[in-house]
Image (cartoon, rainbow, N blue to C red; front, side, top):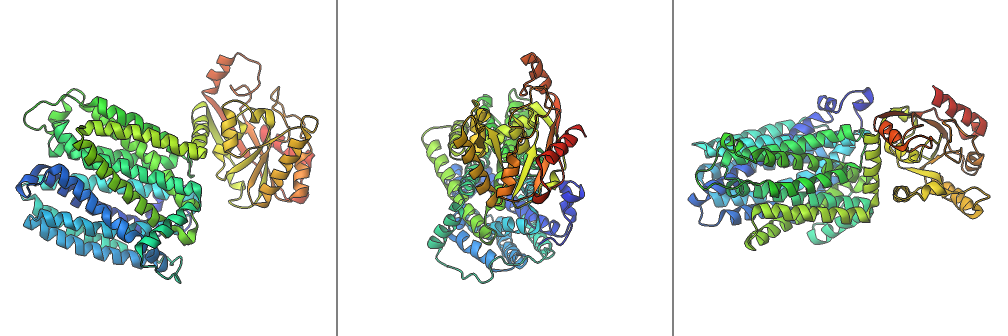
Length: 632
């Protein structure tokens, strides 16, 4: 559904989506919902941490983790049904029904806050979780129905950053209000007002057709949950991405749930210091989410996921080492906390954990939306929510066990940072594509600065052969990092076998080829693979020179391209790499350190020409067109 022109095609930034009806009412609805949830949750958490003794004899640690568990439980019970319900019915109407439920819950919460019924407030977290378990599949399946593939990262970045800005404001407001005299009454009023505003925003969401209106709902949560997990497992990369998302919620839940007591016991800060740190954490995630669209070039860039996981580990560990010595006495205000030695390091770590969390989560969500079958997306999201909930419950149980075993909260943060490194290594071992994309992203954002021209000439789908000049050992990595579609490269086998780069090439599905006089069997295998790849509708890129240039000038094109097109007639697109000759990975005979220094600031270009029909392809004409692009 594309009722309005695509914002990014018009050369506008991602924020232009906020001016369009297909996105703005939906964004406002989810923003107000997240805002309201966090006013409620943070007011309740701080009420438990600092005022809990006035209402209950139970330990604040137990009440905090019990609250987290009750909020998560409905995701196990209702997510399987929610995924089916969202796929069966028109989404805009379904969202409005969910918002009516939110209004009812917040009216009940308002009464409980005013009456000081802590037990009822904790119980209402169960209903909030139920409402959220239905909204999640609607939220993430709505986005790909209204945004194109090249807008997915922008849309998800806005939703993620908007959600965390809402968390930020809600966290601040809930913390500030509950600490005031008469704060419980103020929180009650805000909850009801925000719920009503969210409902009115939902009424402007455009109609979004059901993806499977004929679906018969299976009301058995156990069998349907297993079915949802089966949908996820149909695509191995999607399944492991969902596991990565769920692991992020394990980490996020650990930090968000433990920060209030960590602030009080390890940092000696009062309720307002809790609010400041939670605010900075959510600002970091929002900033990291927004930066994703810019850093990924408006594409689903898996290379940012390893970068995010590295940052989560490094700054999670440093948060343990950064904790200052606690001075026994009255709890510190934010101003007093900032004056203490080591406070800025704590703040720095909290912000960076948030930023790298944004780098980690946005590409994973976008990948799940892009690679899941559209008819099953709501149920894939529901299955994702179930796994998220499982990991958040495990997070709560793990935290309780570690704290009861004698660990401090700071030591708990250190343990989860180490676990994060272990999980990252495990996932990237199973799916090397993530780490390979990180190496490619690093190459074209550090050693080289790439100017891309004519990328729109490459079709979004269908088989096509790309033909390019061959200047350096990393030509394939640069092209792969610039083109939005996965590319299968045909590469001279000796370059394919280079140490370190071999891992990248193998992971990317490179097709090694040799000359007829060197290894005729390998050459024939390569042509068979090329034909099979094109018949599957994929993109193949070849370097018709068959070798790297020795002097910066193109070598004569070999006739292999003609054989490829005769076997599988598909369009051919000429391309040119510019500015790579003399860089560190080229064959220019120069002092290596000088070439490395020059490479670190080299501006290069990738120019994509117009498509050529198969019947018009000749070797000589292709070489002339590539040469024209190189010299243009």
